[in-house]
Length: 377
Image (tube, rainbow, N blue to C red; front, side, top):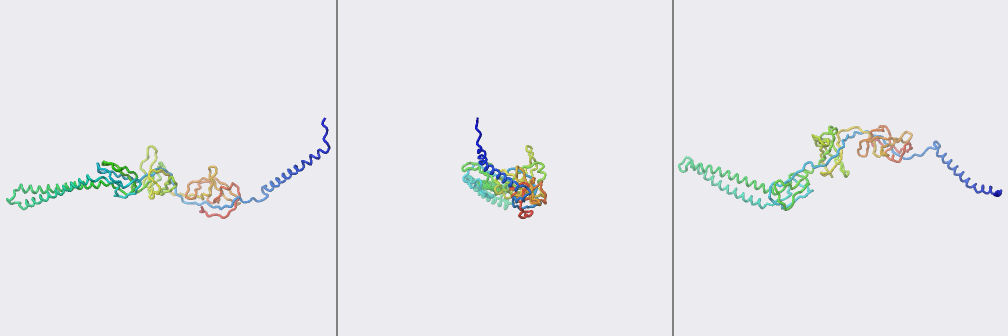
């Protein structure tokens, strides 16, 4: 049998537990006081952020047709050999060189051609001497006309000989010009201003007539050949402005030159030829995206900084009269500079937070520093 506890045991335990009970009670009182202080309506909450508000702005913005396509040379020029059987003895241009019309790009050997020119010059001199003699005989025949000193047959022979000598001289001179042209063709010259894009000429090689030696981009003009669909092509006309964006981020202005009259039967797309007056970093063979500006339409715009992206959606924060913000989901459209078109979810007379919306939540109270003008970025 277990003996009963002494009478003094309970008071001792109570004395040991009293400090812990008192501490727990104090904690509970403190939490209750804090909860009471934070209860709604007991005091005014502080502003979450100091913001600047802005009103949307209605602007006339261009309507753009997006497109993509290759950058190509406006036109290419080919320099080929016009004479054959001659060796390339000098090269004075390479890929990437900017050349001018008539500039020599390569030199063919001239020894054989110079010899032919000299031979033909001698034949011209020989024909000229023969003509001089024939003219003297013809003159005597004319003077003896009607006299017994020279028969009529002989006189006629002298006159015919003069005409034959004239024809022989003209033929010799024509052959001399042909050899001189061949001599000039030993210089491979640029047919237009531009930049050399390819070089097939090799020092020491023997060329044949028609052998392509150089190719150049005429006048350094580059164009964008954008592909568009049939419904888009109906809105595109020559002279419309276009913007081309290169892979590196550079933007180039262009002008529509012509719309192709036919569609590709495989892709059902048409080509739009866009001239780039200042190609900048554009190079033939590159791929680029851009848009063709076909019209203008009003747009309700806000600064780009006023639009907050969350979970794949776009939001703005409207500031009410009580300085509480309301999170509104909006639909965005075109973009220009640092402004964004709002196509749904916002009215023209609303006021929205100009920047800093990423730090706000729906229902937050804000301190308005001063309304920004409607066109403020």
